[in-house]
Image (cartoon, rainbow, N blue to C red; front, side, top):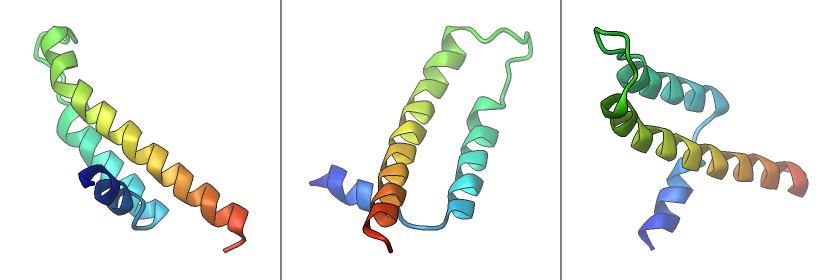
Amino acid sequence: MVQSSRRARDDEGTVIEWAIEAHKAASHHAYHIPNDRQLGEPYYETNLPVVDRQLAKSGARLAHILKLTLEGN
């Protein structure tokens, strides 16, 4: 039940808000490159949950857009 309420929140907002949110996630996580410039296992392990969450959100958002488009709304 938690997942369906999370999915409902994921497709709320505008496309611009979604882009800003994704940019913030990247800025706070993916753009923090280690000083040695090596993207090793710690970088991967830290960022994988962020990537997984963003992919889940984008799937819910795409489904929402397709539903609205196909319903003619």
